[in-house]
Image (cartoon, rainbow, N blue to C red; front, side):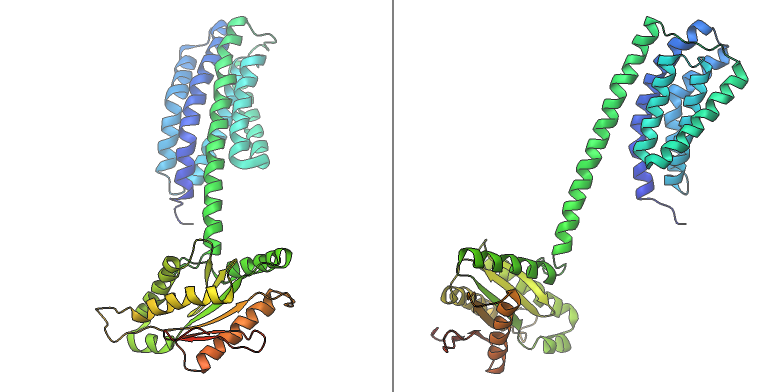
Length: 360
């Protein structure tokens, strides 16, 4: 098993401050319960070391371990044993003992879930039995006012700190979830929507057009002779061409338009509330912009686009039929010379726009 430098060390660091705070607050509670029992000096020394040095020692041991995650889980079990030990040492004095054991249990269940919680309970029982074997304490059934007040910081402050830590962790998890959600919908090369996300958006737009009977146009865009670009200039240049088109789509389309990479060298766009002629004008500007661009480092490299567009029609029986119309228009653009915009037939009229020619 390789060293868990990511998850393991972050877990160790996350536990360091709560452990130090809990042990420090627990010292007050245990000390108030121990004092009437007049324990030996070594017991006080152990309590002081555990309360104010234990968290740092455990942190260093886990940090330097080959397996920090598992070292920290062992630390939690050790905490449980020591919690049980101090509970037993004070004769199971109700308030201090169960305050300490409760805080240890809170750590265990928040760190490892129910199963780890029960393991912690067993470790606490082991600690109690060790204390009983060493001290043979008399069972204490009542807590004094001093012991009550000494336990209040542990009962009030520590749960707040754990709650705050859990809240911060929940916020981080939410942020990670949002990032993963964005990544799952984004094409890594171009930054546009990926194939699946764009088709989901198309399905939503189809439903909206059905409900509101609004005019929306979709487009499929193909980079002409992209295979030749890869074969002549290499795949790195080919990837840069794809990135460049992605950037041009973002710059030349409106904020309401939804652009995606359909696959390979094919891109797709949804233009809401846009007629066929309006979409053609928008995409013609894009086509001309791309066609006129030149890379000083590769002057021989040119890029042109074939574009098929289709407007929503009430007779479409699904988003797939709409997309198929755009695909037919794209095929027609490619088969009649490329570097042009072609629309799906509308009442037997074929719409085409070629290299700045008149739209009509």
